[in-house]
Length: 107
Image 1 (spheres, rainbow, N blue to C red):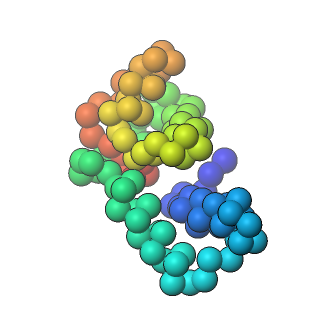
Image 2 (cartoon, rainbow, N blue to C red; image 1 turned 60 degrees about the vertical axis):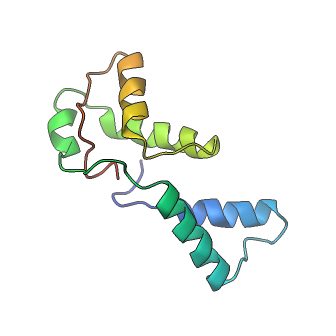
Image 3 (cartoon, rainbow, N blue to C red; image 1 turned 90 degrees about the vertical axis):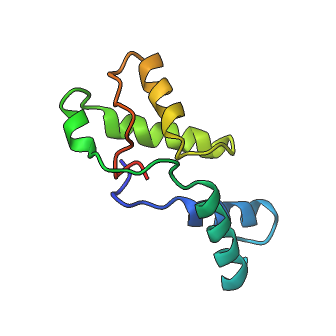
């Protein structure tokens, strides 16, 4: 299970550097530049205010579903913070609709 506040950006950067044959070493300057780029591109589109705690009463697997979905999106180089796409995913797997506002834990 993913930890609260987990940021996958360093893993993506190090993994990409390894894939490029750099043995995971991009140097601090380039690593910060990539991290900034990922955070800008993958920031939440709407203001997060709700909490996952209320939704977990209706869907106890919500957090695991969220992290699995985000991992798949990252692997396909898609935005892991696209709330509307996540909502559509939950509805497609017959989970309750979480509503229009993303959870604080989502962003």
